[in-house]
Every structure is written in C-alpha cells, then in structure tokens.
Image 1 (cartoon, helix red, strand yellow):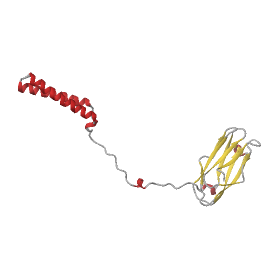
Image 2 (spheres, one colour):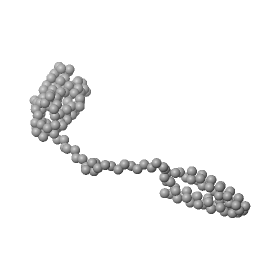
Image 3 (tube, rainbow, N blue to C red):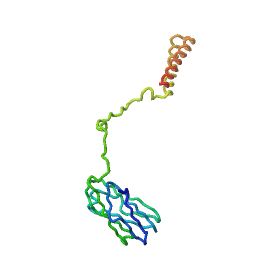
Image 4 (cartoon, rainbow, N blue to C red):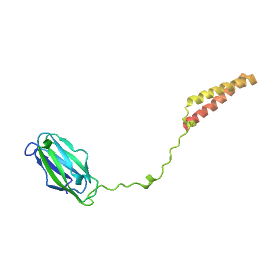
Length: 187
C-alpha cells in the first residue's frame, strides 16, 4: 500500500488534474501534489465521513511551478470508513473526487505509554530563606574580620597598655580570620 497519494497537476493542460479513482489508507498518509507546469492553487476537502476520522492542517495550498508538495492527512480515528477527498484547481476550473477507504483499526498511531513514575507527586524544591555560609562572598567576611581585629586591638591596648601584646593579638586574630576565609572559599 503506498505511503502517499499521487496527484498530478498541469500535466496535460493548464489546471489539469490526474488522480486515482480510489485509495486505501491504513493510517495517516500524504497527498503528493506533483506540479508539471505553472504555479497554481489547490484546494483539498474531506467529506463528512472522512472528516470524522481524519483531518487536514490546511485546505488551500499554493504549489510552485515544476515542484512537488506533500500535504499530510492525519488519520486519528478507527474505520471502517469510506469517504471522498475533493481536489480542486484553478479556483473551481477542475474538480476531482477520490474514494478513500480506511479499514477497521485503520489508524497506525500507537498508543501513548505513560510511565508510572509520572503519576507520583514530585517533591518540591527546597528554598532557603536565608543565604548559607557558602553563598556569602569573602568581602563581607574580611570586612567583619577587620572590624573584629580593630576592636580586639583596642581592647588589648586599653587593658594592657602594651604595644607588643596588641600587635600579637591583632596578628592572631588576622591569621584565624584568614584561615576561616580560606575554609569558606574551598567549600
């Protein structure tokens, strides 16, 4: 059974149509518009019987000179159905009818298989209201560390009045803050 229904346009005369008398479709198929001459418009129409199980995306088609054009007829229902496909060229100058037969179980469309996992509720993504330690950049941490060093130095200077002890305290706090900053960046 052919995958497409050939329709020859302009082969013998302007707007001429050459079509088979009948076509058996086992599922969706293409109407192959083969233009042997000048550009023209083609109108396709499914009668009521066919349109109950099949559909066209568009009914009017422009076919350029000396080209082929495929028009998809989608069969999405079950037969048996017998109907007519009407083909018109030249705005009614030529009209032909093709008997289309779609047998019982005439759709080739396979059923959609849905995975059982899709029926289960999906967990909602967790949202954090506050930024974590990893989200913080090193700038604010170092600024807070510098402020802490300054306060520690002033407290040590006031309590001990020793410059050496103040420098040692500032150095220890700076090293601790530096190690903390490195640990935060590496995680």
